Image 1 (cartoon, rainbow, N blue to C red):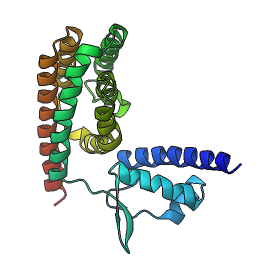
Image 2: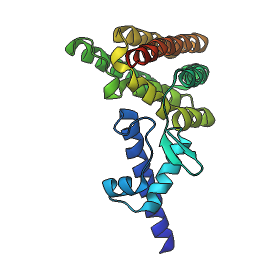
Image 3: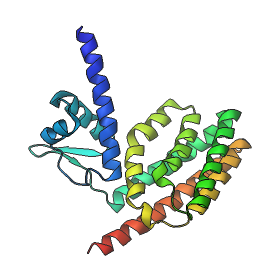
Length: 228
């Protein structure tokens, strides 16, 4: 019986962590805001135990920091942290693309081409509006990461970096231009993977993420100037 209660509690805390993660990424829970356990427990209709477990998971994802005698707060995005995060992302996702060129199954590659066609159609139908809010860009990158087959690489990217990466990207989505350029870069990366050109796939992925980092830096600096 105790084991059953424990399993239910773990499942609840995981579900709650996912909901809170999405709320932080979308800005529904503001950057820098203090985490109020009583308010969140009431809002989500849960007890304090699973909520505390969920907050610990958020801390592990890098979305929340905890300070003695102060408690937990949502992270505050800043340019240097973004550059550090994307520097790691560039190296790791470049490696993932190279590994995927050797291991990605044909049906997975065809599925990614279909996804890019879907992104193309979205841009055509929505006057080149960014599809970041649809999660499509995340899906493209995550599929390649999982296709790498490297368990530790997958864990580092999906469990320790991607929530913060999503937060940075959504925070500046409205100020970034030319989504078609990103789509062209995605197609070039996928072509290299489909042709089993691992070195080229890694190079193109690293260039793609380096460019994204540069654009994010510009957008964050623009936001900082606008708020002064």
